[in-house]
Amino acid sequence: MKLSISGKVMFIYSLVFIAIIFLTFWLSYAGTVGRLEQDLKNTHIALLKQIDDKMEIVFRQTEKDLLNMSQELEYVYFMYDSYDDAAQKYANFFGLSNKLKTLVHTNELFSSIFLYSDVSGDMLTDKIYMKGNVSQDNWLASYIKMKEHSKWLTTHKVWDGEKEQAVVTLIRSYPSISSPEYRKGLVAINISEDVLYRMIKDVYEEDHGGHTFIIDDQANIVTHDDAKQLYKNLADIPYSQQILSHNGSGHFTVNMEGIEQSIFYTASNYTGLANCKRYSQV
Image (cartoon, rainbow, N blue to C red):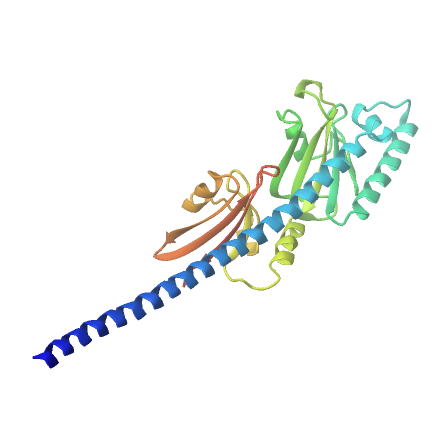
């Protein structure tokens, strides 16, 4: 009888001991997995913030360069189309064109610069001069009535006089602070989409899997590590609206076609763009 009771006690002790070992193992595993997941989140958020910081530096410098250029005397003459005679006009074009070329050549971030005079209808770039009455594709003129003093255009194609490029564009009015009815023209600096792409590649030097991309406030793709995705709009993709509805940075998971997807993002108050990282949990 004593042996039977002792056996039962030992059996219960054994079950308790096994349960404690199992619980300890499970808590250790859960803690390790939790820490790894948090480390993964922190790593991706930190990398995306690096991209955002680099872009903000580039964009702020671009705005500064535009403001500095608007103070050049040749620039003012061009915008107002104010010359004593044809000789002065073409001398001004020559001097201004050289300054545009110098600005582009000394800044590897810029692919081209466009000046548009709403007074004359003429457009001047660092490569060519186009008279208003012969220009067939004066895309810049359509922004003369924009409500803002400056505007960033997400990735689009622009012909710079030599070739067509995928660019992100900063447009600024002239005078710099003026309502639409008092504007004399516009200036635009184009930054190659490849510059933004290289920012991603420089930060994500190693292959972390998944896809890294940037979208604007309308869910248009600004740049993507898969070039085939350029010019696409992600507004119909559920996770894009979740990203755009939040400020700052964050992480969430979604199920797409039966596959769990992890989404990491950082949203910039300055650029209005969201840097995103998506990969499948498989």
